[in-house]
Length: 179
Length: 155
Image 1 (tube, rainbow over the protein chains, first blue to last red):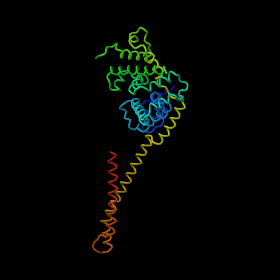
Image 2 (image 1 turned 60 degrees about the vertical axis):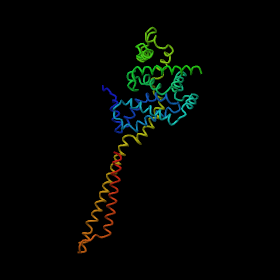
Image 3 (image 1 turned 30 degrees about the horizontal axis):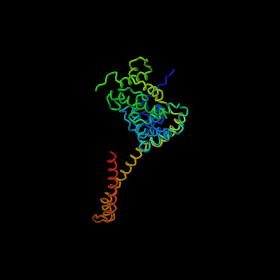
Image 4 (image 1 turned 90 degrees about the horizontal axis):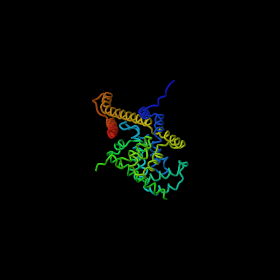
């Protein structure tokens, strides 16, 4: 019986850099859930697909310059954050659109509970640094000491920022429930 | 001020750590007693909905198709091909410039000798040959300088 060992991340990156579409597709499939999750919690519903796609377009354009000094996931997270920032830079009327978005049906998440939709809308109203720390812990699964290293703060300051982010989100969720 | 291990920040962090590790702290656990009660619900919401989730299969496929087409147009393989093509072009142009310079020099220095031998008189530079030679020389040098500068700018 032969055991199929999936190619390592390094192998896939090397092959993708040499022009293998198959390797790139495997990387795409592996990282899509994480990228998509970040994007859907930060971008209005109608633009989630476009921004998710733009993140991977950015990977195509710059994978040749990825030297492996950081982990691929970290590099991709930076690209995602940059694409989200670019999105809001191109569209300065973020809040107006967010309000409009709230009234739109959610095409991708039609079966999603009201609770989930309300959480996402509350989440998008948080300052970016609060969104980031919550995503790093809950979505990316980093420990607090790792998050501290990523954001360049002490562990204590990181935990404090995390608590403030949680409190701000809690307040937004409560406000959402009252409406 | 140094915070103690039981500060609200530490308590909340420990509570989240335990929950994400799959351990629901008991009601009377110190970790649970120290976090603000009303944050518990929000932590549970985040744990439930912030997990990475793939988009629908349709969206996954749509994006994949567009990415594959972009990959063929401007992916690393295509980039390497374009760079190789550009390099080849530069080599051809440089060779052409060198040929022009050599042809220019030959016209200026060799043709008068041939011309002189044919005439059976002392070598004289034909004005036309000199002009053609000088033009070729200048063209060759200009081409060479342009290529050289563009390469240096890239570095």
